[in-house]
Length: 211
Image (cartoon, rainbow, N blue to C red):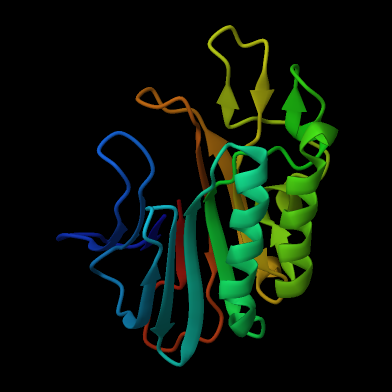
């Protein structure tokens, strides 16, 4: 997850890592150095799957979460239940959860392969997370009737939207755009959205992009 404003950018990013193994897992949250951000607390998992960052811009606090969910169904349910337990204390804060959820949430988020219902328990666990924390799917908010995917099998017979940004409903209406863009160096597409930070007094440009 990378946060930057749309103005001038220079210097090294402020990075917060949660390492996995040499060949798998690992999460990171990066802030452009031009951003005046105060880090209140950083919490990471021991397996490189979760990083939770409590940060403040001026007097506005945000909870940034980057995840890499497991692919096994049973482990996924445990993962999202555990994530809900970790985040419930922030239920009244502005939360942005982004990453690889390894699960299509609706039939329109998948083409080919097994039906979405096969992972019904995982979808329900994510739904519970969204309900408790009042989170909305940023891309679906902007594109309510479209089908676009972030991952595809080599044969392209199976395509899924596995990568999401879930955003607190209290700030969802500040999103200006959300896009899915293919990249040449990975099997997942990039997802990013831009939104207007209301309440920031010091920032010259209050339009930010999160990737």
